[in-house]
Length: 194
Image (cartoon, rainbow, N blue to C red; front, side):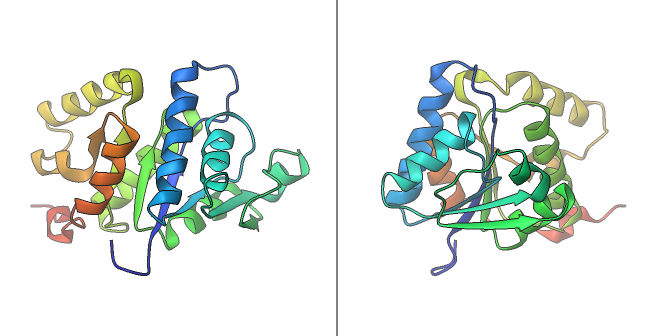
């Protein structure tokens, strides 16, 4: 990541009923963001892994930029103590705003919303619309079935072999931090179709 531009998007769950191992990982990732001077960008939630992540960043002196659609604010889903909160009109505007200045993306475990965001950013990277690192944080082997499915897409020629480089996999928060600092930007030449 370039000096002076250290903002990383994190996609993650808002569920409050998940195993504590995931909350521990989210809190630890937040702590590492603060320690490394990385601004955390996420959906501005106060519950689940998003809440644990945000609290982990803030309790350790870090900064969080939350981006949330107005209907979620009206529903009371927003975290009240973020460094910066940006309110959008739609979920689509929210997603575009989240990655606009992001130097990398990390996906913690999550539900269908997280899965949709992860699939979209991998697609954007494939198309050359987003060229920065994408890391799947595979805590407790949560994403193993997805990773196997992506491999099947490649083996059955739905994706090129080179697309395996669209994402990297970490198993700990520290490994995710290390990867976002070392993965090169995506080469747009890889997106060319024969």
